[in-house]
Image 1 (cartoon, rainbow, N blue to C red):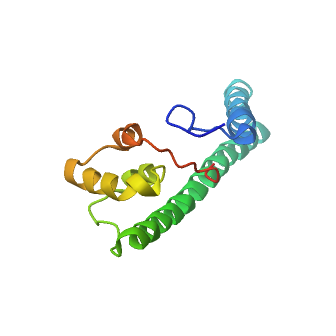
Image 2 (cartoon, helix red, strand yellow):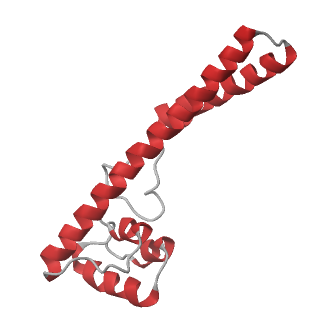
Length: 138
């Protein structure tokens, strides 16, 4: 299926439907147990689930931050190939990430429009006519 504005958001089932819910359930049960039946072991289990929740959360955030850096570099290189100039410095990261979906034919003009009108990432995605898929982002 071709990627477009309506279907470009994706879930990664092992993360969104397994790791996060089970960690939150475990954290909730451990809080209940630590308060209802306080003991050293119940507080230790709570602490472990608390740390596990942050490990799961930060694991996701760190990988997204690395992907954002790669996207910024790729789009800067693409803009340079198409224009001979680097991406305008006024662009924010969210705008660059949204621009990655624009085809080469509309990328430069849309980038100039984004700089001129300061479009949001949602407005950028809505402006794209020829959607360029990004199958690598999680």
